[in-house]
Length: 197
Image (cartoon, rainbow, N blue to C red; front, side, top):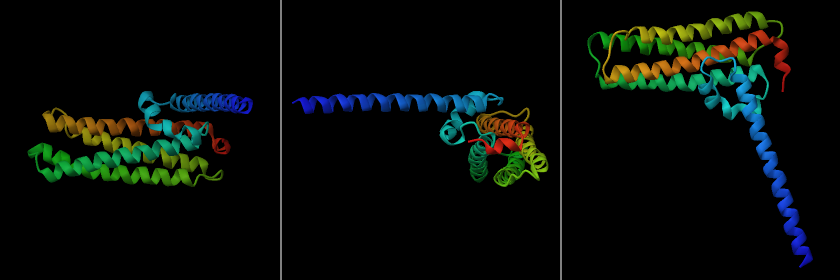
């Protein structure tokens, strides 16, 4: 009986310690992502979309920049698929149809620029860091410009499908803007930040 009681007490102590450790890890993760996203324009979106990276990115500006670009690629590809599906439905006519076709073209450019950006982030080096960061900023800025060019084509237009399209494209600009902000933080942190945990 005494052994059984001792086992239960030890199990309870272990459970309390594991619970405290889990809570502590969760709090640390929240602190990491909040700190990383503090430089972004759309902080709530940044925190929601990048929270899963907390345990691996921790305080590393390079890992947060990679995560930011990666989730942006997923979002932009989803928006691009939406635009292509809208085109297949052939529901937009006249000026809106031309604007939609322009959107599809610039979104493909956006995806290419984001992939180039991710490629640079995977090959950063001390010797080429400044040039790489310049190229990275150029590609990320071009991606954001392309998304805004898509929106410009629908300026003054309305209707259910146009409004839905604007919402999808605008949301992708928020992701891209946040990723650009994270790249900016990496740039100001310098190459030494690549040695962070």
